[in-house]
Image (tube, rainbow, N blue to C red; front, side):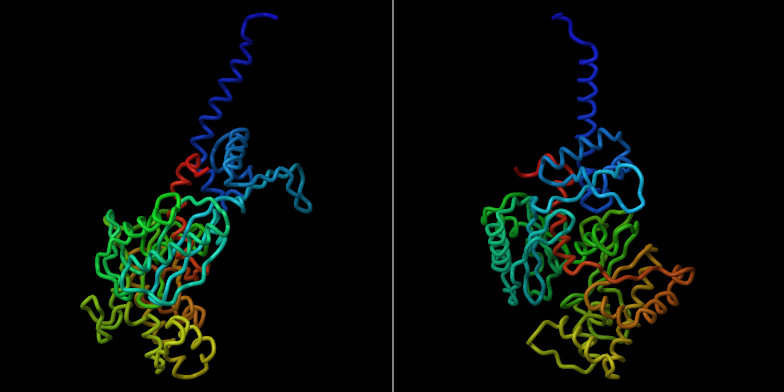
Length: 412
């Protein structure tokens, strides 16, 4: 046997190392493509990454070894197709999860969310929110910790959605007015402390709930494929807005961009807590709708649910129909102003605004088109949000982002 090295073997080793290096650099982009549903097959992954078929195969195999995706090497061929079908790629249904939590005026909710924005498990929501942020966040984290114990899942981190502007880099909730929390509460620090105390692995994050809804919708819902996406939503109280620009969530210089709730749409309207009058925040939220319909809000269910029930069951009532049209006109006026400023290629609406759109889509679209420069030139698509729990899914996206950036850092 000769003692000389085989140059072909050396060349093959160099090629393998080069392929491996390229593959490692592509792991994050590849995982994001599968995570957002943009690479359902290895052939699409190869094209999207701009790498060779062998490199794409190595990347997919590594992500599967990490327990993040599944590769189906024997997919069924579509009827009438020719040739060997490409390997199918999907997120691992039994893979790790992120702990997602949400606080709103009528309670809180915790969930475990896997890759692909799939909610794996949820805890029963609480209907009481204490004025002490530490107590509330401790309770919601414990509910999430119990889900992790029950399911035995690996956890990559935790995310929190709150109905308040969250200032960066400190993570302060500047205006949690409807929660009765103190202005400037350090919610991220408190949340992170509670996560550590519960023995949950991974980093902890916190952000505004509508920002997170927009992030989730852009990756997994009605905003997928949009470049410049405007999201406006009203939940249990107040109105929020978010903007995705060129595929990335726009939060401004300190996390406080897109406070659209304080856009005035009725100069003679209700006083707003910001000091102005007639803002979207007090003219198009559930309390404004119930008041306009002549209904006294009850304590049995949330204001949002009462509004949903009123539109669904009593829309034929003239008072309810008139209230719906009034709020549609006010919302349309606000959206038209935002279209003039932002020129989005898509608008999505959540919460009560989604219900208003469903009730009379032509009226809302006509108001926006008639009041906006760009709307008159062709119209901006206005769609309902597509995810039932988009703020929760968005909170999970915060925790998943470090894994998307570096899949090799996923907990073992």
